[in-house]
Image 1 (tube, rainbow, N blue to C red):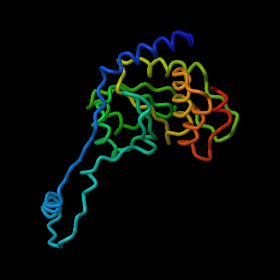
Image 2 (image 1 turned 120 degrees about the horizontal axis):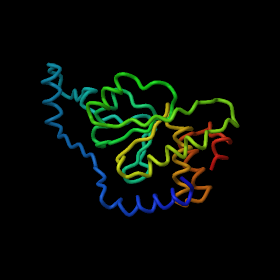
Image 3 (image 1 turned 90 degrees about the vertical axis):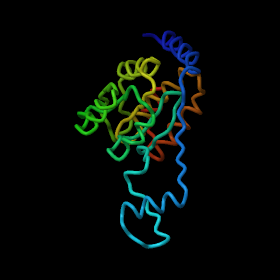
Length: 200
């Protein structure tokens, strides 16, 4: 698929965006409800103790952010993040590492009807190591196909490999390079790689 075709798919994707609902998560717990819940679960009788159990929280994965309607990015999801991911009603996950997906994560995908797309890109600490263009192109096809939405893109930390794929998506959206690099560096912090930025 050439760049012109990818851009055409992006335009089609943007026209269909108004059909995609972006769910807002809102938690509203009164002091009384929180107090009663805690005392019922822990049995303590200390007034002013408003501790919330970890299982009651929606915890996003590391470096989680919304890229576009129906497209999210993050670091590697841990079991503690599964409740949060369920609120996104994901259809697909794009995994950019070569390592096998952990069993707990695979079980989560199966039980929630989420499809896994794995594009194994090696992580390198050295600069000037190229990200394979063919792999990025194939991953972009998955991102642009609205039938896969909502989806989340992730690697280990949601920085370099994820940043490269999101940067290429931004280029198809006709973002200027300085804005693409700014977004990349926001997630990659001081470790932004010259080789990754050259791919764009």
